[in-house]
Length: 333
Ligand SMILES: Nc1ncnc2c1ncn2[C@@H]1O[C@H](COP(=O)(O)OP(=O)(O)OP(=O)(O)O)[C@@H](O)[C@H]1O
Ligand code: SF4
Ligand SMILES: [Mg+2]
Image (cartoon, rainbow, N blue to C red; front, top):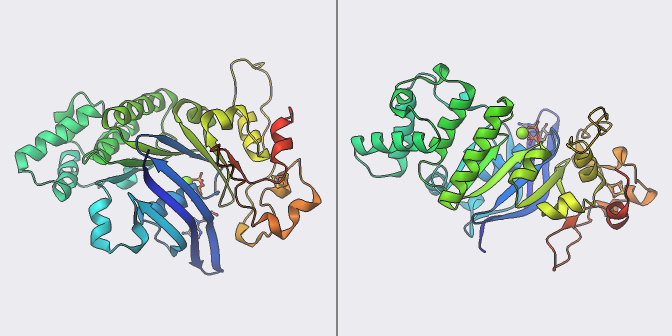
């Protein structure tokens, strides 16, 4: 299987009033063609920053200070604007949590879709219109012709997300990045959008990088999982490795917080005490240490920062924790 996307040693920094801050720290991962990779972690851990860096959309003082972002083997960070624009929105597309902010409020849905098609495909106006309607239908919108005439504010949140999906698919991307695409939607609509993404992925053999904090969704969607904490990937593996053998205390805690049908419905879900530390770039030891029940003196030592994911060539399961084996075998959550 070939890597569609390969991110190597990505360090995102922000220049602000308080100087330089770290968004992500030496993040390495890949996405293969046709697979679904989920990126999980709680608020502020660097999920959006990672995906925005891939899209070249960091803005607001953010930049990739180090690393490579290889798309089909070519480094996006070294590309000229024109080359990047030819890839973005065509082979590489992204959808966001809030579709309203990505849609132009004063243009009809039809015009916006047709504009997107125009920038990447050489079609006459009528063919663009037909393609726009076909895309909306593909995204599960039955009355495509009527929706094309509407403005974004005239549609429900679920419909707007379907429109965004139609736009993202307009040029049949090899990779779709979806950053919390259903967080703003109610549960039934969430399920519909997710099954739509699954279906489309299969139809188009598209890879999907799905960002979420919902482990339930991960279980349904992922082939592989990457868990992020404080700007670093702290565990990665296949969905089975992560769910059956979580080996980082943070992953274990995330999984323990997922409600299960087998559990006593009155059971109080364990929450992870504390929050992602601020200014985590300055922490020299393990970044999870102040919340970790397995913490030892050694975890605070500087070498933990350099602890690369404990790569065993025979498995895809990697963990950034010096006590990973004990954590994995410990029945405690
Ligand atoms: N423009 C910015 N300037 C400075 N710091 C930023 C900026 N954007 C993001 N950050 C910081 O980068 C870190 C990662 O943020 P990011 O938005 O990627 O988190 P996230 O994992 O997507 O969280 P959420 O689940 O809330 O969306 C945070 O500490 C955030 O404060
Ligand atoms: S390295 Fe230490 S502090 Fe960090 S997660 Fe592992 S046991 Fe906990
Ligand atoms: Mg985010």
